[in-house]
Image (cartoon, rainbow, N blue to C red; front, side, top):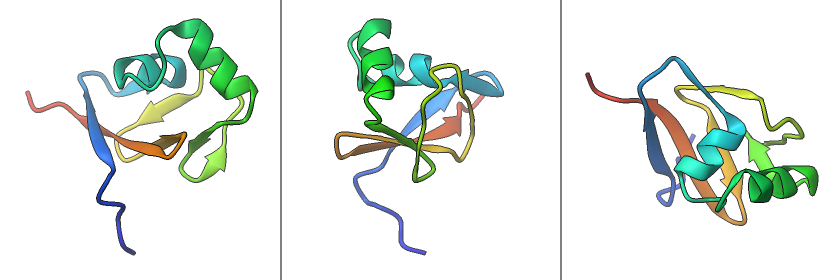
Length: 78
């Protein structure tokens, strides 16, 4: 399986992060309202599937795509 070279890692300290928080942290959304709008309009994919829940828990290895940009959740180095 070939990985997209444009995929950026988003390191997190905890075991998981919620989708809305990840979108804001990765600057894929300006704020929670924009994150909710993107999700409600079906513009956000998690692991290749359209995701409709802003509270979806993301873990290391999950990918999030919005408007042609993709991030991969990773664990921050301690």
